[in-house]
Image 1 (cartoon, rainbow, N blue to C red):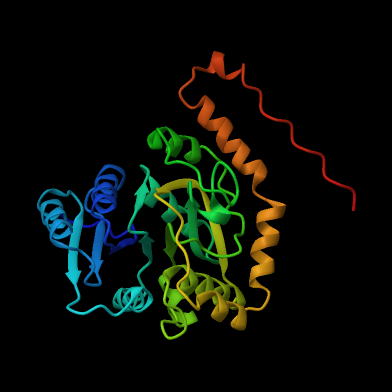
Image 2 (image 1 turned 90 degrees about the vertical axis):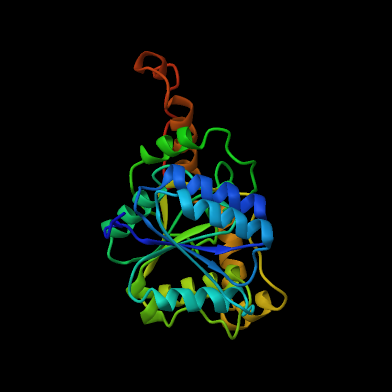
Length: 290
């Protein structure tokens, strides 16, 4: 099956949770266009049941999928950096091992990058996405009951693509040329994808690129990612203002109106026009005088 060259490569690092892997692969099949290039990269993590799940999936998936497995573990960041380097200048969407992408997620992320050449990372909404969390900023919510409906609600938002403090690891589309210019992931300083992605985002920002929210896409996740031991200290040493920056963003919640608009869309998405009129839009708050 021919791959669609207009869509990015999907990179899925294989984890140790077999059930999460099975759910992720099922969501990929259901929500991703046929023929999309997908790379399952296994840092010697999958056990016998995980390997069986992958083998069955490879035999039936409509996606253009490949699977590689290292003989020895090199670590999360080093493994991802190795895989991203192998993709060259191609744009790559990296999914968390427990991610559940909603329908249309990849097309929306690709459209986000295409709208603004300054965007280096595009992050969709998530129930456990820190600065990109929905319905509440910085909080972990349950997995959505109807991800297809939520995807339709998100796709109806105006594509403004506001700035995030950094990309978030549940799902992120990386512009290949920007990533290579920034030097890729720093596997010598950070063990976790969580910290390495923050560091990469900040380096990209320093070079004039943008880390944007793709508000028209949604990817669910079982829980938030986190740093490895020593990662936060390494981030603080290199980026002394990072902790204050992310804390200020979460407290100020500049995306509040956008999240409320998504909640409104979700409530209305399957209603006929006559019933939608019963759910008036919240009035825009007046701006404070300078």
